Length: 127
Image (cartoon, rainbow, N blue to C red; front, side):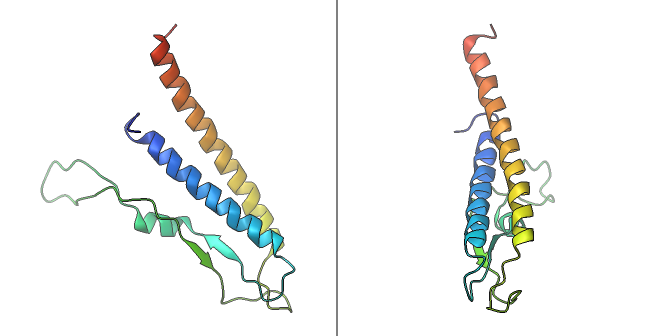
């Protein structure tokens, strides 16, 4: 949907990222006592490295940007071990990331609601 100059699509991509991150965090918390389990993470910097933007160039010497597809990667942190059983889940870190991700998700949903409420007002004629 190409409404609001791609802002809804950007919000959708951000919600997909947040959802994937929530799944990874939940999986890590669920496996906190599993021997040899290695924590998973979704890194936003990785997402930014893969994403590209499209911009209008007013001069041929300007850098060219193109819009790329969202490709969220799930990575396993296999190089560390915090527990004696080979597990590397830091429960305090995971709980803090879960709270931060929940706030991020709530902000995105609120922003998305604002976009749709604006669209609803336009369709109603501003009454």
